[in-house]
Image 1: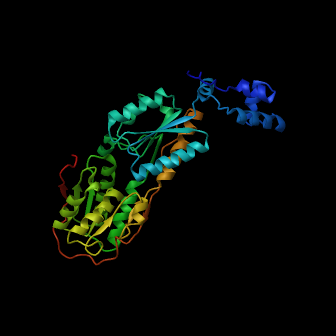
Image 2: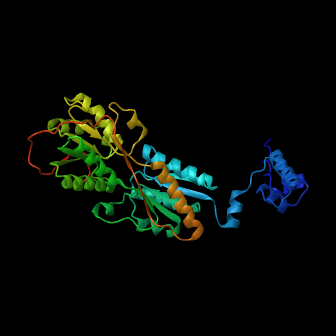
Image 3: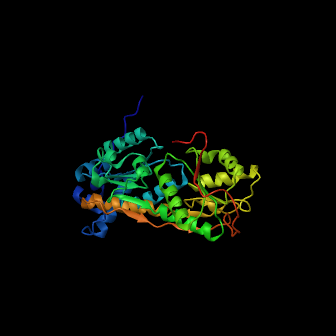
Length: 361
């Protein structure tokens, strides 16, 4: 014989056991200072004994708030995005918000489905991080004062569009790349190669910064190698391309690609850093554990998540989105870019582009 389902413990049960009214019990559970210590203790003891759990859904209907924030990431498996999510969750929890996490995987249709799910679950606010959906499309689905964009990567940015003046948190990637090129120049590197996924706007910004700084310093030639977005999983093609015509140094789009390249170059005649310097971008923990230890641009990813929450909660409470923020980055010099004497001779100072199989256009 099936047992009937147990009845949910409600606030009235707690109030009855504590010998007080429901209103007093509710205030006591919220630690209202107007309720005496003895009464508060009795109410909390009754709630613990009965296993009382407040009805969040009913509370949110009354307050017109769910105290839920959504974060749409490109890829939670990416160490940078994971750090953004960690900072986001920590800051949200400190303000009494729960967090829903979904991923877009650089797929606009998947991102739109995630945004719809957040809206259906009545999230108080949403953070869209490293995604390809244009802000205009996102704002067709979400109120403008309820969404913050983090490290936006939508295609228009590659064509020179500027991120919105409000509601964006990003890092100064261009300054980080410029600092890297200057560091290489100061250490005697002249022939530089930049390798990255051509289809990503963030890559276009970093590549443009490398180009501008190389021209400013009078270095050359600057070579570009377009790689598939997942080239970090198997960078052997990039390693062979570099071995055919070795530059002095290669700037990689991110640390994952740089670390994969360090491993792949071991199967060629090139020795890092004796024959070729390698630098990354992002400052993930593995960059400090590689051999040689990787020179990289460290991005404050946890702080990015925290700032995004602060901006979003401010907007939810005040009804006005704060101005966009650009957080500074820092160059961390490792063993992969030692001092060296510049090469003599070489080809003319003309930029070249190589495209590996599978690289986007």
